[in-house]
Image (cartoon, rainbow, N blue to C red):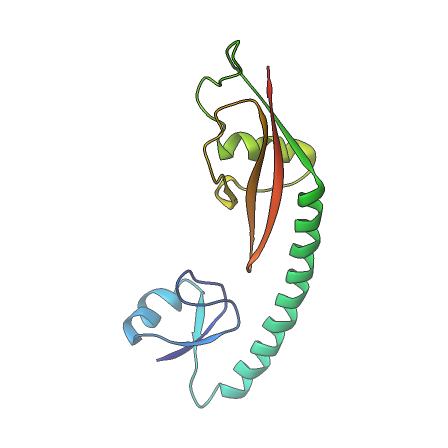
Length: 147
């Protein structure tokens, strides 16, 4: 069964794509949740117009995400943590702590969008990857300082 995605669905496709799925998946999950609409002969023209609308909307969103990624790449995030006299942390810096610090700096980034390549367990400057969606990522410098 062919459906048009109204929302991005993990492991299936992005908004505005027409994808082939099993009929049960479309009827029982995608359509009731508002994630997709069924494509048939009757609504083919309407769906083509919807695809154009989604593509224009996606372009606007992509420009917005790229500007946010540029701003995040230039921003510095400071996280104050408890550490011993050798600058070793009691634990490690989490994505929640970084997200809170970014919120204070004016960026609303959910913790699940942050990826820490290697556990942060010392004082210093570290790189964190921010996934903003639609394939847009930003490298963020995180300054870990002693409380």
